[in-house]
Every structure is written in structure tokens, then in C-alpha cells.
Image 1 (cartoon, one colour):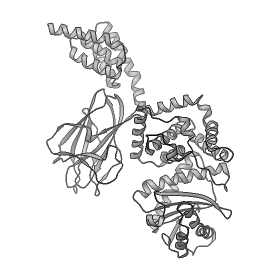
Image 2: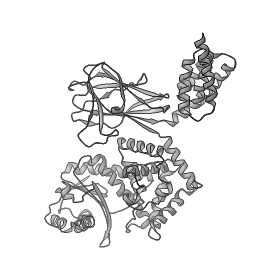
Image 3: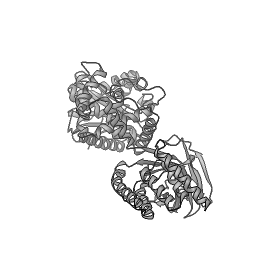
Length: 541
């Protein structure tokens, strides 16, 4: 890295910075109308920081209030460029340096309603690329990564317009979807997947073709009754889906470049449609097929959020627990509330229960509050304890990113989650457990791995049943359900086996579970009649 003092460096950087000095006011004016104020600031050399940092290849020049932050921002920018260009198979686009400006305050930044902005434009036959933001919470974690991806994608568009051409703005869903695909935190990805599942359940997913051709802003693109967050989540999902296709990264790059090439000749909606069909047309015979495959992609990533404050506390070691609303704005998945268990010692526990009725294999994540009075604890789902400890201590009270507990198999019906205190770090003032929510994300691959084995156990159990080996049949059906909870065929046949063994009450539990999973199946009517007859015979005895 190189360290540069303003107005003292000559050569390539000096020319580039001189160009910036003459353009910064103009660029700012294009967005905020503050031309004179910015020009006055530059004329007085009253700029955010008296030092700048640039990389050895002179690709990026970073200005900020202090040298250490400039270096950190430069490292972040270079890392994002390497990640993004590596994904799209690009080495280098422009020979001219780009500017990254971090203002000390929002007032000095001057753009209301935005955390950051990117600008690319021509001035005096020079192509200027600029990213601006200001000192704020999560600047390096969220704001800069998101804006930097916009910056890099716009750079990539110039492969279709030429290095001196201003890149056209991509359709809003694709533009934001790519930015979120690369920059979204783990917590935001969980939020997106939750929103996607709820939109799918409610039948509110956008038509895929409409997403590809949506060239308006967020307000114009919104379906009535949907928030911009839901729309952003769908953009993220579409890009994730396209990237998952064979050579999806190359096809996305080809789409971006083709759109930039075409947008200058036809309407943006038509340009997007043509570019998409050129890049992905061979993957899908029709838009309907594309829509269906995207929906299946979402279904395979089903995400269920169990809100702690809405669950029932069914058991505990006796200490106080409460539901409270957190005063600060954070990324909550459960209505800005949490359940706090004020444990007093190691071994204390609290058990929450909630209806799930979504059997299968899931990755389990916890979102918890950390603070100075919090302890370390483990989680058990339906009696199965995960071995990893979560450390709730943190000097500053904050919400953690989704914490991965591990994989679990969940059967139909309610789910029981037990939180048990293990210990605490020495400096912690207590053993509190702050629970925002549990996140269960379906693992379709694990389910597929288990499905073949489960089917073999079901077939073996059917053979046992036909030979009147009812106990062996029950054991094989149970093994199938251990591998694939909620397998309707295994539940149905185990009910028959349990009736044959004279245990109609247990058989009724299987029947009720099967009916919940397949309420329209006509087979269960006959099964219910046999169950009633079995219960009557037992009562007569």
C-alpha cells in the first residue's frame, strides 16, 4: 500500500487526484444539489482526512478521516474485488484508479436517505468512478460491501459499453440481488430466506419474467402490499438460483455485459429480456418452466423461524423468565422482542415448545442476545443435545449473527427446545440466556440421502407385516421414520402394525400425524375405520 499526502504527490496519482478535485463538486451536485458547498470545501482543502492510501497497482485511492481506517477500507475493497472478479472470471477492467471517499459525518456526506452511493460518469473525456459514504455503524460490515458490489458490477458493464461509456443501470431486482448475494450478512440471508418462504406460502412470489424486466425503481417495481425488503429478498433469491446453475457465474456475467451492450439501442425492458434469453435461454424451454424451477429452489431451502417470545415455556429449573422489547433498532427476525431467562447457576434450564409440523432434516441456528450478564449454554431439540456451546458474554449488549448448532431430524407435530446453562466466563456477571429465535433451514440434500434407506426399511416392514411379523414390521417402520421423519407411508404402515399388536392408542398418534401431513389422502378413511374397530375391541376386553 502507498501513503499519499494531499497536494504533494505527483505523477499518475497526482493527475488522478487533480481530476477528482475538479469533479467532486460536480459529482456530488448530480445527487444532492450541493455543488457550491463541496467546491468550497475542496478549495479550502477541508477534505475528510489529510492523507490518502492507494494500492500498489493504483486501482483504488481511499480517503477517510484517518490513515488506519483508509487502510482497512482499502483492504476490504481489494478483497471484494478479488472475490467478485474471481466469481465472474475477470482479471482487470479499467486502467484508471477509482476513488473511495469516507466523510466524517452524514452532514459532510450530504446525501439524505442513503448510507452510501456510487457514481460513474464522464468529464472532460475522462471516465470517473467514485464511491462515497460516511462514518456510521456497520460501515465496513454492511454499507461498503453492498455499495462496492454495485460499483464493481457497474465496472463490469463497461465490458459491453466500452471503457469510456457510462454503464446503464441494471434492472432493480438483478442489481440489488447481486449486491445482496455477495455482501449480505448471515443474519440478512436468514431474513431473506424467511421472507421468501412466507411469500411462497402466501402465493406472493413475483413472476420470474417480471423480475428480469423490472427496470423501475423500488417504488415502481413493488407489488401492492409488499415491502421493499420482500422484493429485495426475491432479487437475492433469483441471483442465487441463477448462480447455482451449471456455469451460472459465466452466464450472469454474459447477461450483464449483453444488457449493457443492448440497452443503448432498445428500451431497457427489452434489453434485459434479450440479454437474459441470450445468457440463459438454453437452460429453460419456457418462462413457466423457469418459474417452476425457481419455486422448487425456494422450497428446497425452506426456512422456518420459531419466535422465542411466542413459544410456550413448558419446563424450567424455576428461575425467572420474561419477554422484553429491545430498545435499539437491530435486525430482529421476531418482532423486536426476545425471551430472557435469568438463570442463576450451571445446570439451570428452560424448555420452549412450539408447533412446527414440518418434519424432515434441518440445519438449526440460534439468534441470541449477548451481554455482560450472559452465560454459556447448550441447546437440545426434542431430546437431542448439540455438542457446541454458545458463549453469551459480550462487553456490549448486541444480537449475534445466526449461530450454527448443527443438523437435526424433526418429526411431525410440536418441537421442544431446551436451553441448559453450562457455565460462564469469569468476567461475566451472570448466567442469563437471551433468546430471539431459532431458525430451522431445511437440508434437502440430507433428506435425499436418507430417502433411499428409509424406503428400504418401509419395504422390509411391509414384507414383515404381510408375513404377520408385526413386531419386526413396527421396528422397520420406526427405523424409516428415524431416517426420514414425517414419511407418510411409514406412519401409515406403522399404524397398521401397532393395531395388530393391540396398541390402538399409539396407532392413533401415527394416524393423526399422517393426516396432518397428507390431509387429502383417501387411504386414511379406511385406516380410521379399522382404528375405531381396534379401539372398540380393546374396550370390550
